[in-house]
Image 1 (cartoon, rainbow, N blue to C red):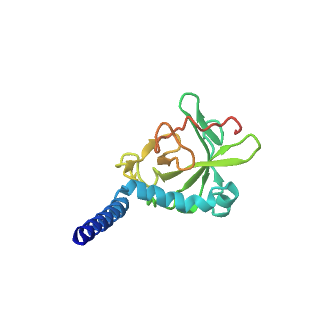
Image 2 (tube, rainbow, N blue to C red; image 1 turned 60 degrees about the vertical axis):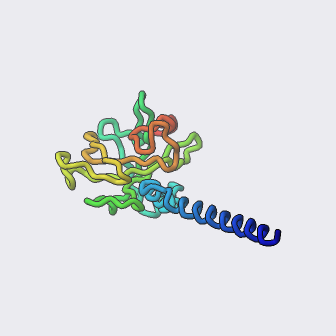
Image 3 (cartoon, helix red, strand yellow; image 1 turned 90 degrees about the vertical axis):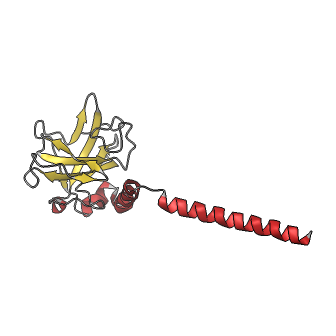
Length: 178
């Protein structure tokens, strides 16, 4: 009886150890590269989600629509993007996951701004519109003829029912912006 009890306990302990090791191993390998990159982005922008912090970090150029001058970009059918704050020192021929060129904010009724996402850009003057699109997070950038650039939105501050990388977010509003 003692021999059987020992064997049973040993088997249970070994089974528990294998189970714990399997879970620990599967957890570390279950994230895709895209998920790891998004987590790195979230960590990188965590300290600059407040507009004043982003401005202190160099996101000081407010992007306006060249057609009408509006700084909160919206589409009546597709939703909005929000107000874009560009860090001009980051604009070059390289995009880095942890250094988005643009921080995006939704204007609030009280005059404040709420962080909703980021955008990575490469102007056509650096990477021609006839060239292959840049890729980040495994996603191709889209052409933006209005601003003459390649762009990729990542909605890390506000969920986007249209998709993490969609250009427009129906859950973002420019109701209190201009």
